[in-house]
Length: 141
Image (tube, rainbow, N blue to C red; front, side, top):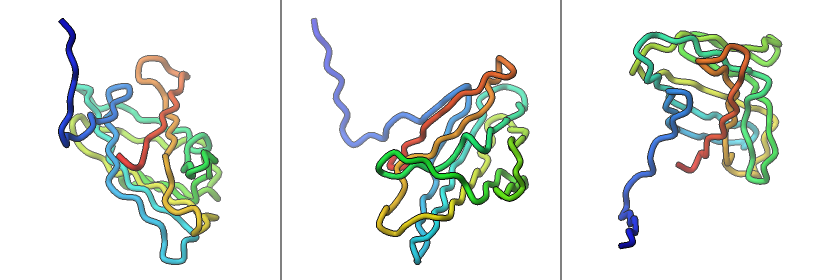
């Protein structure tokens, strides 16, 4: 007997990596088309608060051709980092089952590129210190 899975208008399953669910909230290109803002929600499924450590220089926005762009600023909760700070990591304590807004802004964008295709996040594995996971999030989800 063969089975066939059929989906009628159902949402895709959420992206979960290392017990963190990533949801795309909003993607905006400025009116001038020279910057992009991406809002994500990160939700930890672990039973206890966990430290989230993001490698800022290995994370960014990806255009429709697959070219990555460095952030101008990023913010998670009250923690904000500008590229001029030259800070390698953003550290944040994620509470269990509590959505945390993560916002990434990039400059040097061109209007003709339209909306970005993906966001790439590189963060530390919760089970192995020093090991980083690289995750690409499709923004058309």
